[in-house]
Amino acid sequence: GENVEQHPSTLSVQEGDSAVIKCTYSDSASNYFPWYKQELGKGPQLIIDIRSNVGEKKDQRIAVTLNKTAKHFSLHITETQPEDSAVYFCAALGRGSYIPTFGRGTSLIVHP
Amino acid sequence: KAGVTQTPRYLIKTRGQQVTLSCSPISGHRSVSWYQQTPGQGLQFLFEYFSETQRNKGNFPGRFSGRQFSNSRSEMNVSTLELGDSALYLCASSPDRGTGELFFGEGSRLTVL
Image (tube, rainbow over all chains, first blue to last red; front, side):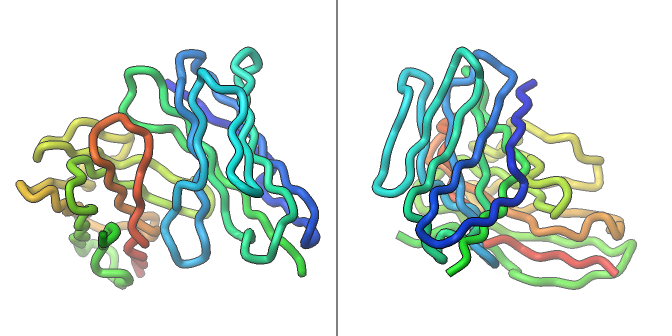
C-alpha cells in the first residue's frame, strides 16, 4: 500500500519568514495530494490540493509543488503569520483507491 | 451549510467499558470515514462507510466497529476499552467515495482510565 513520509515533524519560524513542509510517497500511481491544517481543538481542514497532472498550485500565501519523478510534494507558506501556527498533514490518494494515506504531521510554530 | 457534527466532544471511560460515538455528516454527503488520532501515530484510518455498508477497514482489532444509517449518519463503537484507546476520534464526510477531499468534524476526545 501507499506510504507517506512527512518532514519535519516540528518547524519553528519567525513571523514573516517562509515555511516549507515536504512529503514523499511510495506509490507512483497516486494522483491526488491534499494538505490539511489542524488548529488546536479542531478537526483537520483542507487548505490546498494538487493533482498529478499539475506541477504547482498557488492560493494567496500558500502553494504546493509536485515532483512526480521524485515522488515528493511540498507545501510552501510565505509571509507566515501567528495564525498559521497549527499542525499540517499531507496525504496521498492512489489511483483507484478510496482512502488517502496521511503523513504524520508537522507542527508549525510562528513566533510573533 | 452545517459542518460535520460529532458527539460527544469529550468523554471519560474506564477500562473494560464500551463507548459509542456519533457523527452527522454534511447534508448531501454520502461517504463517512473514521480516524483515530494520537500524538505518536498521527491519523490512523478506522473505517469507511457508504450507502450503509462498510467499504474499507483499517488495521484495528474487532473491538472497533461501526455502522451507517440510511440518512448517512454514522456511529462507531469500541468495546472492552483499553488504556491505549485514549485518543481523538475524528469523523470525516465527503460527497462521494474516492474524492480524497474530506470534511472533518472536531472530533470526540476519549480518555480511558
